[in-house]
Image 1 (cartoon, rainbow, N blue to C red):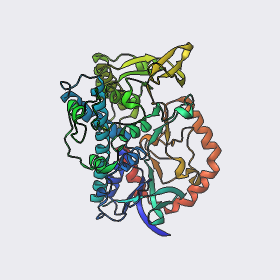
Image 2: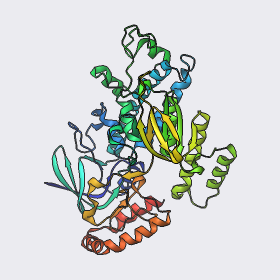
Image 3: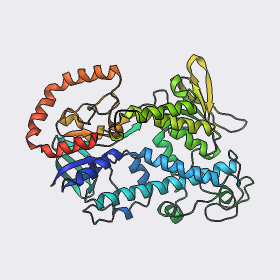
Image 4: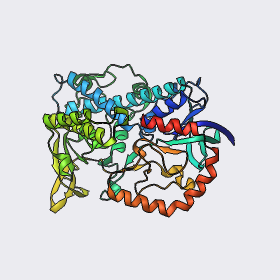
Length: 472
């Protein structure tokens, strides 16, 4: 087993973790980023390794989704799809079947293209800054070392400071039965992977080229419907025997309505994406404040509150920036025609229609209300991607959603271990504070043993730089 020593190691690709790794690289010689994912045939090495040339398939999106880059991919895809939709309004009416087929194909292409380009760009930037990138399944051995099982065997990574930046994912609600998961009902991440699968559904060189070619020009809706992606003559409405444009499987191409459960930032981003695909979208949330209409006056007041804040932009509390981002997304969703409903979903079941062959989903809500949709995307509570890291070995316990507790500077109660980004649990609720105190009391003896064992190996300069970067 090889041993590699670093001053600082960031686990995951969360944007805040990437910024931290770059800042640490300006001060220290040995900095590494661990991507908890293993790709066959992916080389590992120093800054000269051409990593950005090997992510030409659908692995790029999965890696980004599992490493904290979901928000960046979705926002860039939505922005590109919005420009495409604005350019093709004259070609096919929004909401028509021809438009939906064209939009699905374009969204699939954009997701694959954006993912490959973003992952390649991240790896190139890290290499240019002299940061080593290690791929593999990562788990802590103790508070000073991390085991990374990659293509070249298992290596022990020893560092003065570790930063958790693995992000979070949407949890499946309890009211979704297992047979409906991925079969009409999706989480945010599962829906994106299903949507991107349409690009490579037919396989072949054309599917791979659609991901690798980041300079390809988007096609208009009418062009896609007439000629498909290979230029073959086809009329998707009449079905004249040509080669139709590739669209995702699983009923997405036939759906006309969609329901998004949860009106948080993820839910609003998902609603905008579905609306750009030509679907009628309803967002359901049980919080009346979240579904209340956003006026220009409310948004302006939120902007003025941010500007008048005593905190500098880099040290602004997450609650302030998240509220402004959610209000902005809410206003965009309203303008796009997204419908908002205050309700609480208690269950979902499939309802077959023998006359039309359709398979709508029936959502059972509070007080026996029934709501319908052909696609349901769940954007509820987030769970951290921490179980595989074996944080229990270093005495770092997580909350009920596998998210890490830390202070406002990102420090956990284990010496030399920090956390940033979506993997950090919320600190605002009183219940969280009570539970945190209880957990600390329960694990105090274990934590004390680990801290005393690892405190001698810590470098004060490394931890001080990490703390300054998190608060600067």
